[in-house]
Image (cartoon, rainbow, N blue to C red; front, side, top):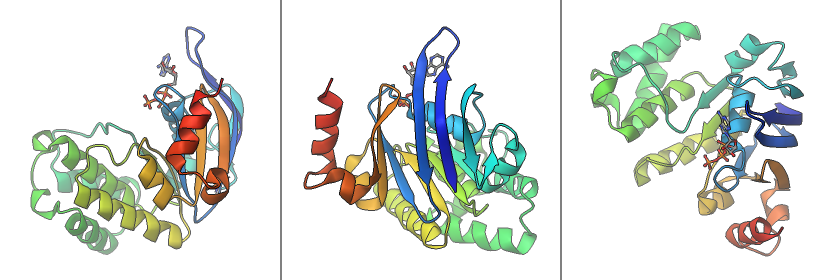
Length: 237
Ligand SMILES: Nc1ncnc2c1ncn2[C@@H]1O[C@H](COP(=O)(O)OP(=O)(O)OP(=O)(O)O)[C@@H](O)[C@H]1O
């Protein structure tokens, strides 16, 4: 589903944010991406989503290169940044219809899915309100709904649980599991190691732009908790 081959990113000014990263995410995976602040998670997610250019390496989604077939890749991928920037002058329902139009979601399917996810995230009664009046968590929930109604094959999430209340976090985890059971894949960054440990069948740990551990969660962790492993790996020189 997602193949990252020797991806590196050097920002203007010379900062190498990601260094020769290779990773495979398969259909059905809930893949957690873990690392300290500044490790390179957002840089990697933005490159996969096709919103950040890069020179070294390639990223394939469903076998298509994000560099050469960006539009086709974006059709099957949804990306929610850690701080979604939505169109504030639209109402919730106008925004979701805008997304529905762009991705050609039929009227009946759109209505069904907006109801399903709107109700689950307790957003249905706020759909007529302007996004400028939404709290941070409400904006995040609307962004998640806009991604879920598209039924993406690959869902990329940057710190999805930050800012969500416990019920919304639980709802999101349920839908993440549902999506992957149906054959999609999720690659997401998180600092919440307990969530990663429970939810993810695979995890990757990045440090200073380099992957230092990856694979099946149980195999990567061994007998330790994810927190113990993370602390040990991060403290190693
Ligand atoms: N636009 C930019 N220009 C220059 N350097 C950048 C830019 N964006 C990020 N960086 C640098 O790249 C490195 C990786 O940043 P990135 O945002 O990918 O980290 P992160 O793992 O997502 O961190 P956090 O957990 O704090 O969100 C950091 O050293 C950061 O300072």
